[in-house]
Length: 139
Image 1 (cartoon, rainbow, N blue to C red):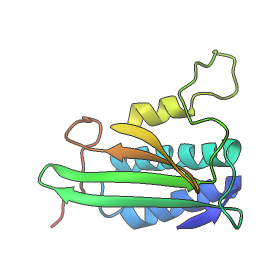
Image 2 (cartoon, rainbow, N blue to C red; image 1 turned 180 degrees about the vertical axis):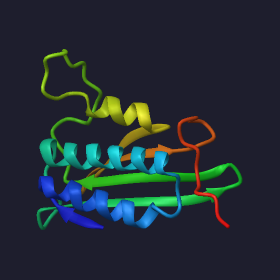
Image 3 (cartoon, rainbow, N blue to C red; image 1 turned 90 degrees about the horizontal axis):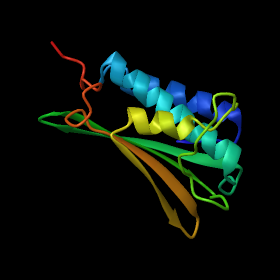
């Protein structure tokens, strides 16, 4: 999906993700996905340039496996002068904790750059992250 390169873009992305995955993943995993997506879109809006048209591209992919769902979130923007990195934030700092949240909730995360900009991704694998119990049981 495409959202505006604006703080409202994070809200739109969170709602769409929740609508798409609420019946597929557990509430615990969904809450983690929503928190990470909000951080990634928020960081894009604060620190990176938009894609042409003043937008950010947001995507997620769900792959089922015998061990549970594997999910990847991706946020693509026009890039920034520096790559996203985990910073050390003082207790009084107003920001600087977002990628700590991403790192703590996702199995892994990373950044890919190309000629168009950058993509920040976060993977969720319930087999290697015990707080992600996986798919919602059916019938």
